[in-house]
Length: 523
Image 1 (cartoon, rainbow, N blue to C red):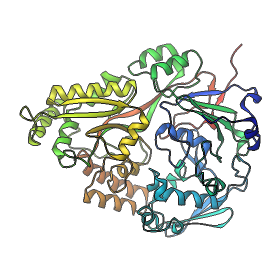
Image 2: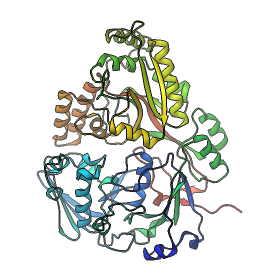
Image 3: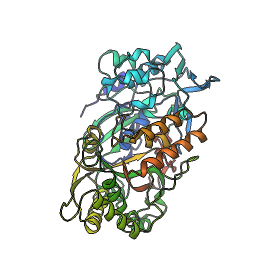
Image 4: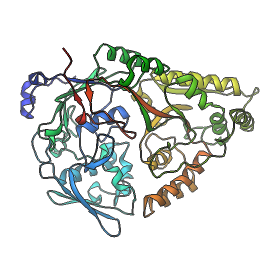
């Protein structure tokens, strides 16, 4: 833990939390996070904190909608390749210094610098020279961004990208504090930030404490002075802490207890669809998964998703057959050939495919499923292992590790067989880019030239409708080969204290803390 002294807070222009006399807003946030560096945040738990610390050209509203952020206005050239953003002159870092276009130039260059090792650097792949930089073939200074004036930021794309603006609220595209970079610290333990909040303490395996940034351009609209994100990896413990009033909002509810929780808490329980999917990721850089399409298909077909949804978790999740979730405006899920079959038909086909892949009584298959620690992940994988054993004779051994460790294995692609992962985004292209083995990240390493061509064609479409149509073709092709095995489209299930105002359904993200207000406790 880094201890923050009164003097350090004063130097940042901040008051100590205790001095305000206001009650601290305490939020459950799942597993411990690995970083406060918003350009390296990758898990939904890290992203949630990052969205409170930094603000990009655009920002997320209370319901996850894109709103003006540091950029107050912008325009696009007729050919769709040049974006010009006008920045707010009153945008400030938490040390009081101005946020300028040069900070965005520095941030975007840092994002694509290979040594940064940012998992989401591919968000800028269509910016001029980004691909060459990421491959180590060009200097980051050649990236197609510029600061012609202190409050003017320009971006040059190498090709048209219909959904480019949709990326701009995302955390990895926030600016960076250049003096911190120049000191060689890159991302200090408690970074200077330009969002509604600044981090003032971090206690590993316990919490991150944020305090209102008095220099935030819209600070007057931020009602809560101090916010704490608490580590709540155990859902039962999190529920108990909410019951006692120790937490004002949870990040989840215990699996299988939705009806009981609703009966006890009524309107305090919030359930809504989320643009997210839980899936099994075969390691396609290792045999047999890299070469045995029939094996992947057999495993996928044998898993009864309806049973996982209705009997195992019973907490609002929807059976998922597609990788891109339903409900994303403008995107139509492709109909997969096997999704309309009965489970009995799928089971019979799975046995046939497994035999054709060369496995059976004479060659039994033993695999490992890596999954994050947590009740619902354990329940899902116990059920999956039972299905594979009963239907196919496949032995699936389970191995659980901390979420950040599982993510590290996914990025390194050093796990032996399958790993449980999740992805949450309301941008369809991010799901398919996650599959693309040419892009790195923590996808499975899928390579198919036709899939790659369809993705490329989608990126070059002049509008979203045309882009989404091509993405649908790419998804249909990929999912017939089972490069990932979707299990469930997740729903958000959280308990919100009756004292907490401002929380709204936000399918692609979570309501930022700047919109939350804690009412005084009743005497």
